[in-house]
Length: 251
Image (cartoon, rainbow, N blue to C red):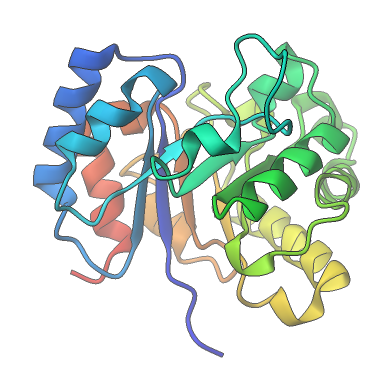
């Protein structure tokens, strides 16, 4: 089995404007553009995608979007379709816990977005994860397994898929899961993939997300089922984000 190429993806969320986002992109590109052995992705706000792409021109850093509609076009004010993103991004985040919680997105809707993205040649970064009450009740594994299976209902393009396990209780809190907890849950994710698509189980990349930083990234990446990180706050600091890329890369 060929080794899975690690992924370091930065989700800027609703941070930066066009000017500051462009400056951040340039700094990340200067610090990390030449690092090899790792897939590097930044996901800026929609309004900055073009300028960030220009700022990173010539580097190996890829651009992702933070969301996409499952609809191809029509009366969906404020939504962004895959056809609008084609040629601009290589990846798109779907099912982030903030969208599930704040926008009421269901796993069925997430599955539809993932399928639509993959059909358009855009690789989905599909997020799943439990909140603190689920973990405290001892139901984290069963919850995540069910959520991931539901979010992959009807999905077939396994070569393009990236899964991101993000425990809700660790996102933006400064409290990361331990490497043992993260490994346990990413292994659960891999077993779900093995159930749905046995031939893809050892090739689909599974990331961990939730307060990842330069102090804990090496231990997380050392786990057998963790293939990288989906990073929030640390991706807004070029030097810190570049340390994560360096930790995952071969240079």
